[in-house]
Amino acid sequence: MKHKSWLVVVLCWAVLLTSSGVSFADDNEEVLVLQPDAEGIQRVFIILDSYEYAPARISVEAGVPIEFQLENQSFLTPHNFIIDYPAVGLQHNVSVDAGDSAMIRFLVETPGTYTCYCVNQFLFFPSHREEGMEGRLEVRPAGH
Image 1 (cartoon, rainbow, N blue to C red):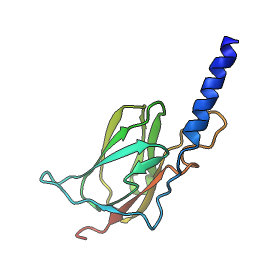
Image 2 (image 1 turned 30 degrees about the vertical axis):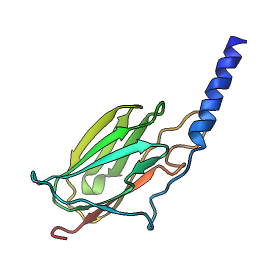
Image 3 (image 1 turned 90 degrees about the horizontal axis):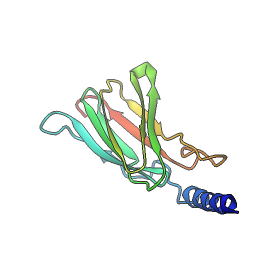
Image 4 (image 1 turned 90 degrees about the vertical axis):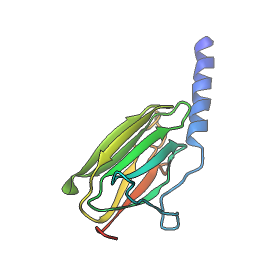
């Protein structure tokens, strides 16, 4: 009987974790436009929580170093941050456990729009990306 109670608790948590609001990075969302700081780095703090990245749309200038400070504010849920465009040298896959943080630094030379996402999944439920955990990195031409 003890195992059945534990299973009920786990299933209840699963339902709660997968039924939160869905947030897609769409064209109507506000874009955070980054500018280089005194050290010449475009920095941003990104929250990973409840199947979303906040901010979900970030605009940067090509050819200027970028730093993402990722913080997973979920209580139990691990997340990851994947951006995979090998043709432009943009490949990152960072796992961030619940309550932890991570930092990535990179440089993008090619203007364009690049999607980032989380592929974590609990059992048979939809993946975090399928639940809407996507963001966009919009790279402006240098000097813009």
